[in-house]
Length: 406
Image (tube, rainbow, N blue to C red):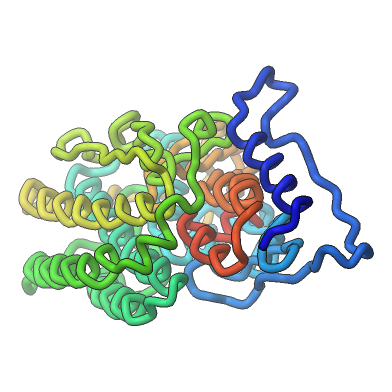
């Protein structure tokens, strides 16, 4: 049974969560509760920073009464870090082995955004076939990330076979990346001016289709084992609900926002590459709890499968895939600044790039979805939960710690 004091603490946090901000100076998450750990009523433990595979090396400092969380503080920096400053000391082309490590499950988005920012400053126009191949690569890595994430979400609730299925099917996608780029995890395939090389000329699109069919079968299996599972339903429904009025103040994007019924998607709102030539709809939810966020990500997998098939059907069969650049080791990008963004599997990601006209970036700043989702938002949603539900909540927010500690 919960004590009266604990019930009061949880109620205070619920009231704060449901309160609309009165003014910019009085946000609903401003109130902080202080706990006397020496009183013997509370226990502080560390959740992490072991590497569970989906949320990476990230620690939560939890204050508990019994098994209920009364305070949560996030700690990052247990993984590779300092990417932005490293890039200021490297030539533009030398930054690509760095940017792909900013989010390991989705490295190609970082490659695309950095390349697009450089291209905008340098006035480079990517050939049409190069743009279609870029879009294909981005949707393929979205599939790989969402498939692993869906398995990780199941694993957080004890459905470990689905986690193994997700990793196995992600490997099928990585096989395609290895064939296309020569690398499985880090590809460094999208470069300024286009992509490094064209498709293998021995039936690559057909092998992509084979993997898509395997993923469609996987989704049917996950439907039966996970979404029709009474235990998963009872634990995930109502867990970590996000009110629609939180979306803008917290800067929530991606599926986490769309599950709350807010229709935001960079591919639709600010089309890039060839997304304005593809037919797809923004998938929305209403409940905005862990169950619905997971359900929408399953639908996102099917949506990406549809987009990949459209890309392979509509893309030009021949043509250049990149433009010729100056000697990249002595390339001076014209002075200026720009901000480019894209819709990743976790939400909006953007790169702010400043050049002073030298061979090195003057400033690079990365904005990923994980900063708001996995820190400020998680710290609010975790209060009042059983410690057994913290991992499931954390995975549902699609955390990628290197994005935070850049």
